[in-house]
Each structure stands twice: as structure tokens, then as C-alpha cells.
Image (cartoon, rainbow, N blue to C red; front, side, top):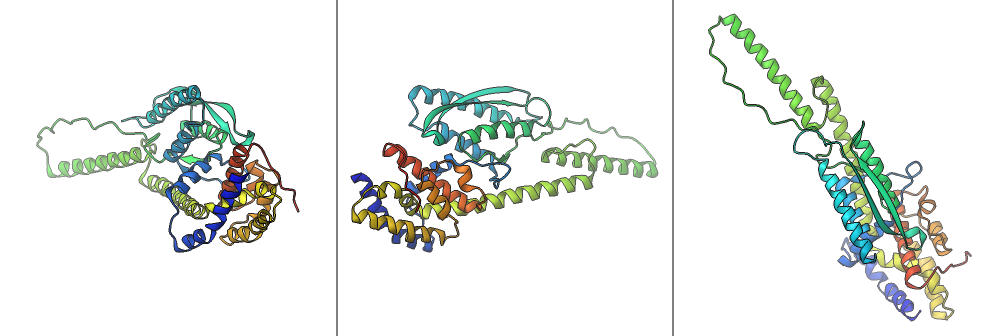
Amino acid sequence: MHLLRRAISDLLTGRHAVTAAAASGNLLPASAAACWQHTCGYSSIKAEKEAQQVQPFSVALQQLEEAVTEQLLPPDMLASNRKALATLKEFAASLEPAQGYPPASVRKVQFVFRDPYSQGRLQRVQCQLKTTGGDCPHLVQQSLGQLLQRLGLPPHFYFDGDQFQLKAPPPRPRAPPRPRISSPATSAAASAVDSRVAALEALRGKAAAAGFPSQTISEQQFQEMEGQSEASRAEAKEAAEAKAAQLEKIKQLEPLIKAVACVPWLAAQKDAVSQDKVRMLKTQVVDELESWGWDLRGAVRRVWAGERHLPPLVQGKDPGTQLAIQAIVYHALRNDQKYGGLVRLDPE
């Protein structure tokens, strides 16, 4: 408990410095950023009732790798996870063949992880990845999304590379045309036919490079499909930029968030100094966090009372508030583990 008092005192002492750094746009040390990146591993998204957080496929794989290779796992399980991760990366690489479409294949992987919603108990999760049958991109997104969600990561992603892009084979060398003698009228007609053939081949090449069916597509259809694809990419990019801005704000205010998560353990100390700190955290510090546009107070009280299940805490909240609540729940779970169990603060 002495260590806990000292940690809370250090956090509260740095409160004004953190606020000044956030207002000036300066970043906190890299350790705070690294801690928050680990926090994101406990995020959980309900597909029907909560706002979807769509991220690039490469980012989803990076988050998955961090979640299954944490050093707190037993050595044998960590080695098994690394082997399964290598299989998963091979499968991801097979989605971008040099030419043609990804080959039909089925891969099964199994990971061991610490479940944040069962007090860090070791759990096993299996996933079957396949590129067989119809609509392979959707099958991969569905199965891998379920794996990400079970690990407490955002399950929604979009392919940001050349995955499932039908690549045209290299053009065959053509024999030089034979010289022929023709009338001016015949030459003009032949030239017009060659121009139409060249235009059609160019259109098919553009469609294949963009991942669209290329045999029966018209120029107008290609333009419409390309516009829809660009709009989807722009929307995903805008959502990713908004999330990055919220994460930057949370990194700046992380010392205050950690202090708020410690309130139940500090309240267990009955001395006057600890109680004064508790009152300041419950009023001034929470007010300051909410001044950044986050609706936190109700969810924070439920966390203090012992709630650790993330979906009901973030239900109906805006994306920025959801990320802030995830950070508070993460630090509360860390405190449960560090100080030997759950401490509840009775609601007032």
C-alpha cells in the first residue's frame, strides 16, 4: 500500500505539467505511448450496437502479434504462439501472389493469451483461415475478425495492400506484323479496328489492376466502381485519422487517467491525506478529463464499483470516449493484478 500511495502522489504532482503539455501540443515520453499501445489490446467492439473502428489489415496483424507475444506468457506457450504466428504471416503473404488470384488453402492456428475479462487467466483461441469457396475476402475478414475480437482487439479491418487483387500476367511478346499491300480505305478501317482493340485491352488492364472483373466491364462501369472504391478508402482514412487524434490526446493525459483508475485502492486508506486525494480525483481530475470532450463520469463510477466488462461501459459513447474508458479499464485491471485482487468503491 505504501507503493500505491507514492505512485498516486507522483501522478497528482505531475497533473498540471501534463495539462500544460496537452494544451501546447507537446508529447509525453515514449513510455507513455508504449503503455497506451498495449492498452489497445484490451479493446472490444460490439458489431451491431457500437461504432465500428476500421483499420488497415497491416495494423491489425501488428496488434495481433503484440497481443500473442507478450513476455508475461509461459515460455512454452510463447514459443507455440510464435509458431502459430509464423503460419498466420505465411497465409497473409499468400493473399498477395505475384500474379493471378490467391491460391485455395486452409490454415488452422491456435494462440494462448491472457484474457483481460477473466482476471488475466490463460485462455486458448483457435482460428481457421481459408481461401476456398466464394467471396474469399469476406471469409478471411470474418474468421480473422473473430480471432481479433477474442483477443480483445478491434475486429474490423480493410485490406490495405494487394490482397485479393487479380493481377494480369505479363503480356506475351507479339510477332512483328507482316507487311501487306492494301488500298487507303482498307488501311483506314484496319487502323480503326486496331484502335478499338487497344482501347479495350487498356481498359481490361486498368480493371484487373484495380481488382475489378475485366472481361465484360465497360468504361462507364469501371469509372463508377473505381469511384465507390475511392470513397470507401477515403472514409476509412478519415476514421483512422480521427482515432489517431484521440489516441494522441489520451497519451498526453495518461497520468491523470492512471490516477483515476487507482481511486478504490487509495480510498481504502483511511488517513486524512489519502481521503483528500480521493476527493480531488473524484471531482477536479474527472472534471478536467471531461473538459476534453469525453463523457466519462458514469462509466468511471462503475469501474470504481468493480465493473471490468468493456462493452456495457462504452455502449452509446462516442469513439473518443470509448478509447478513454478503455484506458481506464486497462489500468484498473493492471491494479487488480498488481495489488492482489479487486477493490470496490461503494457508489455514493
